[in-house]
Length: 82
Image (cartoon, rainbow, N blue to C red; front, top):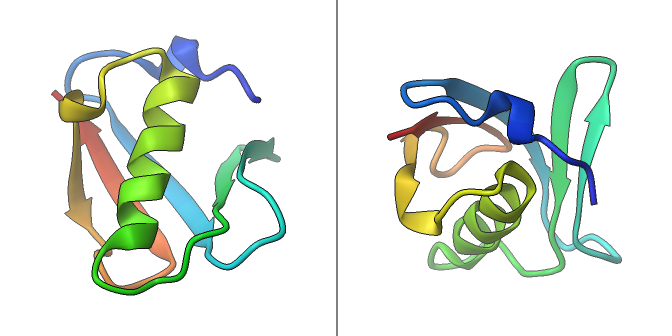
């Protein structure tokens, strides 16, 4: 898994591109863009919960510290670290 601990600052905004229904769960740093792939389906917030779990693990923070600011129903999401 990609180590993103250098981004874990209070108040930091983290933009991610999400791919649901992927073959595996992964956090990938690709040319300055954070890509998160999850195996769950985008239904009833299940994919968002999986993204938060993976992103929190990559950042080395608790899941409760990540707040979804924008993109609840889209592939491009913006998270804020409280």
